Each structure stands twice: as structure tokens, then as C-alpha cells.
Image (cartoon, rainbow, N blue to C red; front, side, top):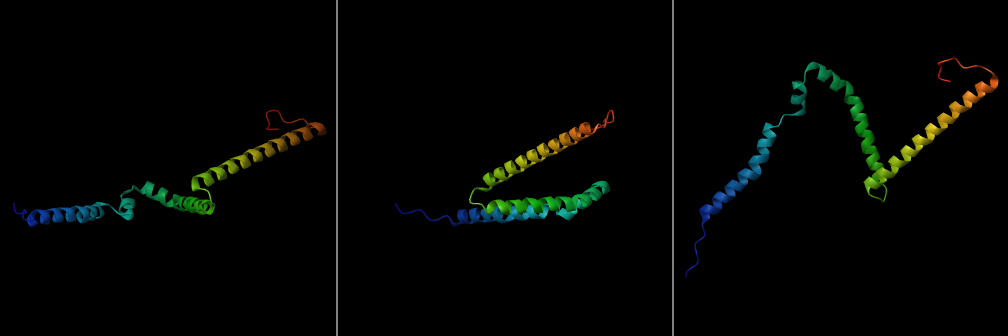
Length: 125
């Protein structure tokens, strides 16, 4: 029995369909997707003003985030572990600051009591 002939027409159609899917699909997505400027122009004027006002703050937050990631990446631990350690240290620092402030307030109250000055009713001291 002789070997079957190669069906070049079938392989040509398959190659053309593959090229259309691999090249045409991303090209269509790029052509259909709006740019950031087009999206911004579709906002109503209030949203445009608010977006422009918050842009600097969001950029600063992003820069801080990237800076922290760079700092975490210098460690020999994975980034998520370094971030967890830094978050725990930050939380502990805030707790210590609150304790210090409460002790300072109590010391002021005690100083006022010892001086014989009566606090104002309804006041914070």
C-alpha cells in the first residue's frame, strides 16, 4: 500500500487560521481598547477635577509602595515575609507610641492634681 499524499491545502488552511488567531486577535484588542486619555475625556467634569486633584497623592503612594518593595527585595527572605515583619514592627511602634502618649497624659493629670488646680468640668483633662 503506497503512502498517502500530503494534503498541503489542509495544512495551508490551518497555518492561515493560526496566523489570523495569533496575529489578528491581539491586533483587534489593541485597535478596540481605548487609551487612557480617551477614557479620561469620557469622565464627567467633576470626576476629571477630582482625578487631577488626587493624581499627586496616588503617585506618591505608588512611589512609596515601590520603595518599600525595593527595600524588601534586598532581604534574603521572600518579599511577603519581609513585608509581614515590617508591618509587625510598624504596628508595634504605633502601640508603643500610644502607650507613651497615654503615660504622658496620665503624668499631666497627676501633675495638675498635685498642683491643686481643678480641671474644667467636661474638659479633656
